[in-house]
Image (cartoon, rainbow over all chains, first blue to last red; front, top):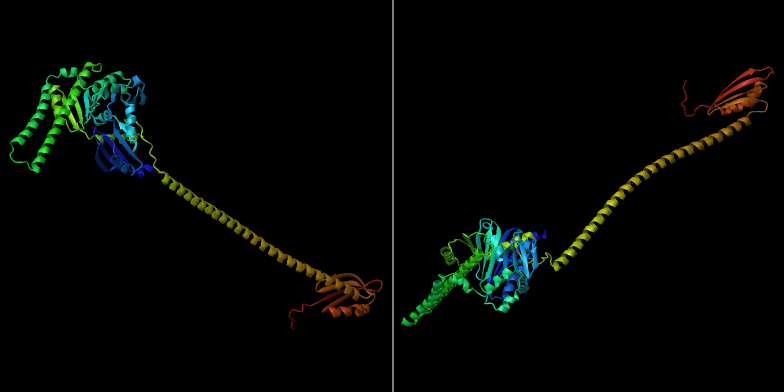
Length: 345
Length: 175
């Protein structure tokens, strides 16, 4: 009864490789009071970051802090009965959550504990899997026919095959992972052997075996390099043939143009990398036991990064897939999941 | 827990300070309510007692009134008894005076003494003895005296003397 007198504050933390995005909403009697957003530089949470969150959690005791699990060792699998999981469980160093008794989410227990330690000053209430975001965001679609669903983040790509609401196969790729050594690979140990193999593959980067099948893509790689060179050449030409020293405004214009160009190139590279990962996942799915003669015709992509046009083109032209891209505000999805969780308490 | 890998931390809605403040407020309110209930009970009890006392007072007043009535009755009874005693004393004195009044030669056979009348039955050796020895004192006492004589065998006379006292408060009849 007392809860009615307090506002509920939901805080979503999105961790990127070099920054934290914090989105806060205040709700009272199912009415949105405010929404704030702030970005903090730094891969590790800083004092201003904690101070910003602390400012909100002091407003009401009913505050819920949610984190979208940014760690690489996570995923989803079909079936719950194989691991005797009714709703949730732990085993083999992984925390597992069963969804509708049909499929399950898993994440490294050690990484979850590390995340909780990392944000201990404010305390985490929820840690969500990207696959939960896919499930929630595409809740109107996953009940339909067999299709591939993807969540494209800046530093990660999550792929899930759903057939009539049932997860068939899934994989999570972390784009920011450094090239792993053998020792690193041994530090995370899952009992799921197949998953472990997949993770090791990811840590080792893209294998040459996979790239062999993508003959056409060499041209794109060349183009990528050439575009950088051409860009540099253009700058050199300006420096060489210009008789006058450029003004400050001209220099700033050139700098901003260079930045835009760099961002464009980054997006292009990311799109291409995501395309590669989707292609690899598809080939792995078709080669595995999950396929059972089914072929993916449609790919739904939840785009949380802002890229997508090149990725859509690649997928449509190279793999002949129907691609539907939906823009996604990841923070809003995390906040929506937080509210669902809070209501279920 | 549907989507989250961790369970949320407990959210105490009431801080320690607020809890203490609420505790003291609760205790204070409880004490106030307790005092109010006590006073309410006492007032109710007092009113009930007042009603009982009023009933008792009424009963006592009734009883007092009854006793007063009894006292009046007893007073009247006592007065009556005193009056009777006085009358008896007077009558006794009158009878004694009457017997003192009757001479030795006259014999009374019956006497009827009333409040305002005296009827004597007796025998006298002769009318003169009666006339001088008894009738004269009777006449001095009573207002009206009537005597009837009847001769008997031995030459004496049986007499009936009726003597009356008139009511002094009665108005005199003017002929």
